[in-house]
Image 1 (cartoon, helix red, strand yellow):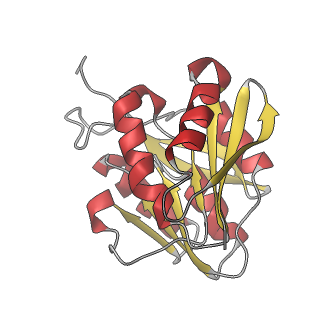
Image 2 (spheres, rainbow, N blue to C red):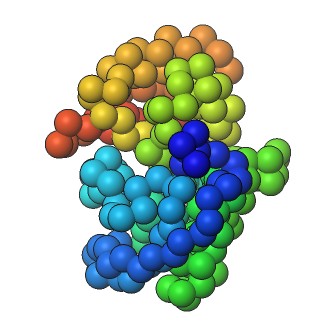
Length: 206
């Protein structure tokens, strides 16, 4: 349908699965994607930059892939640290089904693909990785980050990849202005720049 977006909660279009070959965690792998989700034909450039540049989890714990889509970042994190529990969170139920399918096909048992409301309120994260859905609009994006970034455990980091032309610098300024002065203030910096994308690091001090 013309009004359907990848951030729709329950896509109404008929499901059309497709197999694609991608590189995840240093190896070529076959995964399943579908219509009415984000970047079904390949791993988009921003996600590739995040997967290439951002540090990987280590030492286990709960980590978050916020806005997971069909799951490239979640698969990347789960393969990198089998002792970690990866929470793949998205509002698109079709995307979550694909994450579960891809995790099963790769033999991964450390991914929980869930709606935002299904993440336990008491859970804190040893790291957050996200290619956030900029096109949902500034108010919705800010609300999402206000909810999830405070759930970082002390001494850990969030890694956000944002295209420069879609407001990475303004988002960095907003993050820097929003969180200092509050309990659990975050230190925000630009970690890397690649192919027109910026990786923003939000560190929660110990």
